[in-house]
Length: 203
Image 1 (tube, one colour):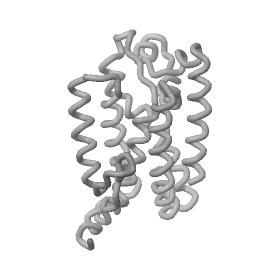
Image 2: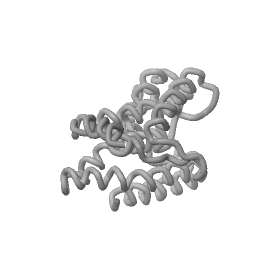
Image 3: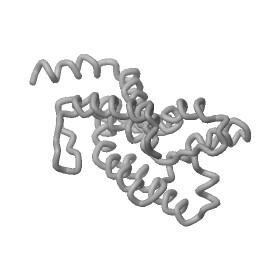
Image 4: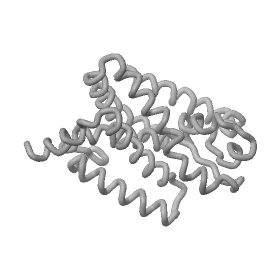
């Protein structure tokens, strides 16, 4: 859980700094054009550690606060100290991987930019769902549904909204971040699949 809290602390510090320093904000945000045409490669990661406003920051960090320690504990329980390393790799790789679709889609569009940890947080959330599919996910602390059902609805919704492009939210990053989280956990711990199925059979 300590690594999750460290990521939260770093993200809050960088986000608050970005909100009060426009130059830093502009240099850190994920801008595919700048990556493709100016080779500003750091934007692949830096954009995932700043946010547009306090609400944006709060929602992402609150989600990470609830689900990050669970997945981190599962990794440490399975892999001991290596589990911390795997958790860090999952989070840090999820930031650029969740933005790859947007990069190829907008790399010649100077006006497109994105910010926020949503893609990486989605990866953590879906990695957690793999380990605990029958647990509950509560929306707005009131509406609770099984984690596996939430996962399906989430993917359908984000895919649909990503295609419609009706708002300023990075639905593509949410969708591909979630998929990355699933794939990463399955690769590092293939036994999660039979265990996932077993939780339904045993319930």
